[in-house]
Structures are given as structure tokens and as C-alpha cells.
Image (cartoon, rainbow, N blue to C red; front, side, top):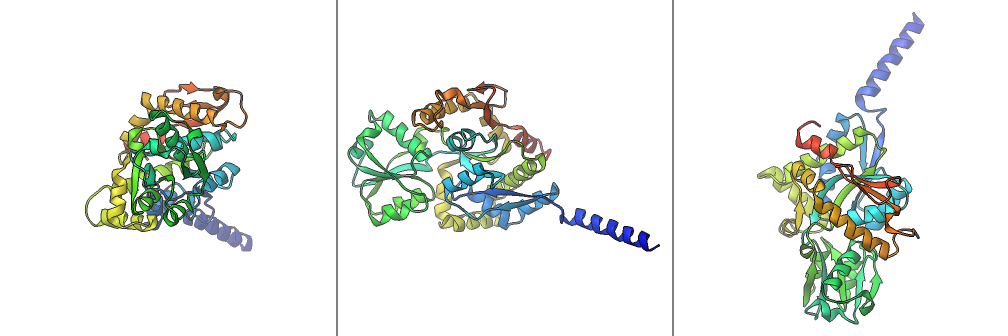
Length: 347
């Protein structure tokens, strides 16, 4: 009888643990400040993220906001199961580094959220001979390269100063000479410097700077489904009307260091895919393949392929099973399956 009581007690304990999440595995998502990624902070604070994690029997730990490049490096090293990043950085850091990664959520593309700002200079050609602050080899660098191409200039006409995104706004604000290339909310901060002018922004290359939530391809479906479910519930709340939307926007503005009005202005230059169907359509479009061709050309030319002899070293796959690059070394996958499930109400 004593043994039966012990067994019964152990069974009850196991049942309790399974139903309270005591045995739930924790998965970690890293993030950094950007207009299109502030929703993750609200998803956590509102309980949406925890609700979806519980639905799939796991726990999700959202990091504190990090330096952007540091967060991707930590993801690549294995410290995190997922991370927010752009399409270019997903290719050049984890994918080229050998980490098989999936673009799980195509959240938006920058439509004016990345820009080149200068004080006392009126156009891109006026940057000749100037010093420029930027996160070198990031999408800011890509944006600058595209702007120079469109104006018959080259990087040799400038001097670039690699500057962390944690320091770039304060550096330009304290000494607004030369120019700065950055993204929101930092872009709005540097535009507040007296005499500053926006010379070029991502609306002039629409659909090329894409903001993603990336996960390890071998991460479990439970983690992927929970992230996608939480994301689109957050999208629904922030894009709606009434008190819930105001609460969501107010919280995101606070985490971004902006007022609600400023944050709404940032959203106007962010082509958010509030509806999962819109994200699916974009991910299946021919434009995405063209963009990734631009991106891998730039990345290879800048030496971001870890010494590889050609740009086909890493394979990139798309929802229609097409692959550019090495089909035997696919390390970046655009997968619309879970977004499609969200669109169909199947999560």
C-alpha cells in the first residue's frame, strides 16, 4: 500500500508538472530596437507571447533589447533560438557562418525607415570627401551603396566610420558634421538635429530592406507556431482601433524612446504586413528573388562571404522550392508555411 501511495503521488506530481509547464522547454528570442520589431516587446508585456507559448507547451524568453549586430552574433553562436534581423544580415552572418536559418516571419520592409542624413549638405553628391557614421556592412551600408550607385559615386569618394547603433545617434547629435546612415527610431532622432536634411531613404529602393524574425531551421514546430501566432495577434491589436490599439502603440513608442505621435510617424515609413496573407504574397513574389540577387551581389563584393570564391557558396531557398546558390548548402530559407497557417486560421 505504501508503494502504491508513492506511485500515486509521483503520478500526480508528473500530471501537475505537465499541466503547469514545469517541464516545458524554454526557447530564447533575441531582439533589438527598430520600429518593425518593437511589437515583440509589447507581445511580451501584454502576455500575448506567453499565451501562445503555453498553447504549444513551451516557454519563450524574450531578451532585453540588444545592440543589433551583437544579437545576431549571439544567435549565430547558439545562444538564442531565434533573432530579429534583416534579409541581408540573415544571409551574411548566420547563413554564411553555417547556421541553417529560416525566415519565419516576414514582418515588413523599410519604406523610408532607413536613411542618410547630413547637416549643411543638400544632396548625395555633396557627401564627397565627407566622413560618415554607420554600422559598417549592415543594411545601412547597403542603403548607402545603392544611393551612391544612383548618383554616379563610389565609396572611395567618402570616409566611413564604423559606429555601433547604440552610439550612432548621440555621436551625430553631439557633433553633426559629415553624415550619418541609420534606421528608426535612431533616424528620427538624428533628423531632429537643427539643420539636418534627409538626403536619401529606403522608399527609393522599396522592398529591398526586409525585416524578419529568423529561427534555426531545426527548431521545433511548437516554437515556430507560437512565435507566428503571437506576432499576428500583436499585429491585430496594434492595427485596430480603440483602447487596445492605443495601449499597444503607446507601449511600443515608449520602448522605442518616442512619443506615440512620433512612433506613428515611424510606422508610416514602415511597410508593415499586418495581415499574414500579405506577408505570404510578398514572400512568394518574384520581387523577393530579385532583391536577394541584389543583396548577395553586394554581400559578396564587400567580402561578407567568409573568403568564398563566388556568391553561389550559400544557397537561398524560396517557398516554390527554387534555390539560388548552392543547392547542397542551403542555409537561408524563406518559408511561408507558418504564415500561411496564420492566414488560414489554422494555428
